[in-house]
Length: 444
Image (cartoon, rainbow, N blue to C red; front, side):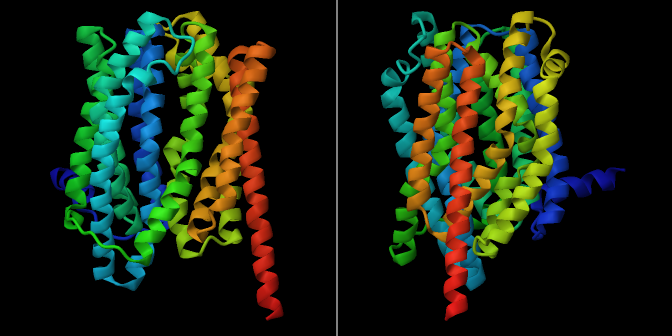
């Protein structure tokens, strides 16, 4: 028994074997199941020990605002994977060279954006237009305590990109498991003993630091600086700015949703956060889009590969959406309807869950599609699609919430319309491009 446990520990901390997508989905889904369980236990701790109030609204609003800065980490993470895959195909030295360059850029981004966030705090706390002075003060406190979370996230994503480009998916997802477990333990113990909302941002910052140390240790062979300017570097920088819009869609949707939720009164933002978490829990377990970029890079973003991931996304999302739409109260009541989580909290969260579930397939599909555009280095068209999608989300929220007064349901329906637009439009662009390319090759 001891030797078996020891072998698992050694596997988690020194796993260097490249994995197939099928093998990785099976293994990482199992790991992510435990990560999501700990994530659920963390949210359950908040629900039972603290409940929904203006403090939790401020915390979830702070998370969405910090997410705006983390767009840069997400972009650099996914931008690194295809370029590292291509570099690896050229040789080990080329791979290490590029990994060193990306690590240099990661340090620059982490320091500069952390400082920028600190400077912009007086502006950030004014963004939720429905917040009163007490909520704004809590928001400012939450942002300050989330600064380490922001800083360490860049390094976690960098080494995650390196590991995934080497098909070492399990090692990466173990890092996420460590973060999830640490966040649960610190949240539960902190709320139990101190019953203060500052526990929530502090627990995330501390957990991110612990998980990042693991990631750095696991990828320590690539812990070095390198700086050079060549055509590939210029291409990475050019694509970086286009990708900000694509990766920013999800974060901007969340921010827009929560801005309008701040107009609904206390608990609205918290209910949206919990409803979104439950609606997209399947995606959090499987992490299919994160692995899709490796397969897309290897097949040059072929429509066949995209369709394969689309079918898999549809297979997962349809039954999930059906259940969550018609029985939304059931999982909310069972999972969170305890302690200080009131009947009002259950009702608001169930409404958010019901209507957010409609976006599940398009949420999956969009993440595969924009990675295909990225691999193809064809970013300008989908850049404008993403911008239009954010505008549609904002306008739809205004119409549904301010004009028709549909409340939380209106916010979620606005997100659904925006995701449907960007997904369908992007797929049509990729379909048309492949047909044109195929036609040109056949005539030549």
